[in-house]
Image 1: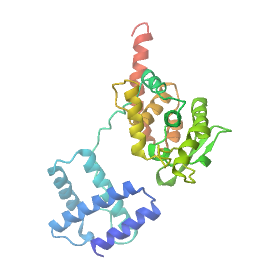
Image 2: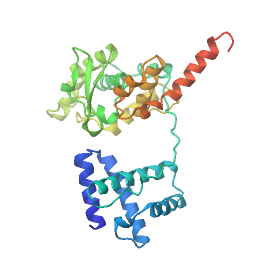
Image 3: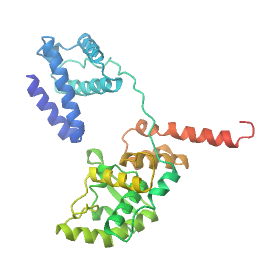
Image 4: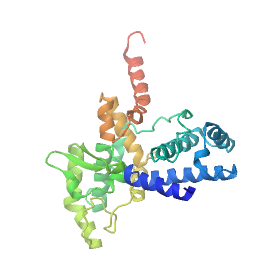
Length: 299
């Protein structure tokens, strides 16, 4: 099969069987195009000819282009998945990346807000206006659930169960999870849905079930959420940079600092692998060390 046909078959596999997001799909296919270009420059036109030695040369090319270890690791990971697919489809005899180790990448420690900083954000919205009610409900829900901004803007009225205080979230790969929320988020959401949202919805004359709407009554976008948070930061006169994912980091860090177990936080965040959640332990270790140094008699 030609490179083009192999790419199309792999694309179909990623979309249908792996159910990857459009964002992930783009990276996989871009990485594959990058590899195919390398093969052509090497005079190779058949993936069956790719062996360990070829992959080592490819790895050298990647480092020659001054790519970061993170980028190299991602490209190799994409290739490993591609050749695993080819092996399953009997297009190659073996996966040439099976014995190639991915370069270790340093995971950055997540940035988060301290409780004092976050508290200021909850005081800036005018709860007598539709937009103020929306902004407060948005901030309360993001912090109460730790959901991704992409998950938040997709929420509909039917996803929220006020009787038991849970929200149904559809995450990556259309995986669903229930997340509880407390009274602060409940009160803010009910106030907005019963008042401010109705006012905003009339502006668009749409029959929409989406919870969070923009000033024209249309569904709020992820960019819109970032703009709202920036505006709230400015009103609170904070000098920190706040984005939706930082609220998610804050949610996880505060839970772990207060004694939540890692597995529970993993489930709440919708992480497929525990290693994705473990990054927050770097932050909580600093917190525990500070407590120890300030309280132990012989610290």
